[in-house]
Length: 149
Image (cartoon, rainbow, N blue to C red; front, side, top):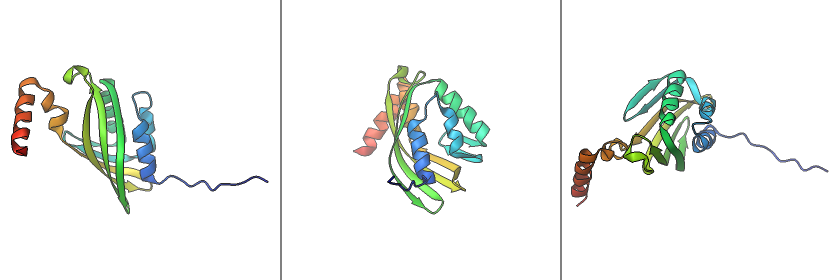
C-alpha cells in the first residue's frame, strides 16, 4: 500500500520569503512568480511602477552587487497585508570598497490573487549609503552616537 501525503499549497507570504531568500543575479526571473504586472515598489530612495520597470531596477542593482542575501526573521499576515523583518547582507562594488555590510529593515506587502501588488521597504538609507561616504559617514556616525547618549 502506498501512503499518500497531502501536499499543501504555499501561502503567498511563504512563496515570497522562499523567492527572496534564494534570489540572486543568476535567477532574477523568479521575481516574476511573486510580483503582479502592476506592482508598486517603494523604498527610501525609489518609487517604481510596473513589473518591467522593477525587473530592470533589480537587474541594474544586482549587476553591481558582489553579494546580496536577504534573511527573513519574522513575518505577520493580516488578510492581504503582510509585514516582514529582515536583514540584508550585501557587498556593493561602489560602496565601502566592496566590503560586506548588514542592514536591517522591514517590508509591508499587499497581495491580490496571491501576487504582490504593493511592496514598501523601510530601512535606514544612511546606514546603506551615507555612512559609507568618508566625511559624511563620520559626521552621521558621530550624530547617531551623541543622540544615543
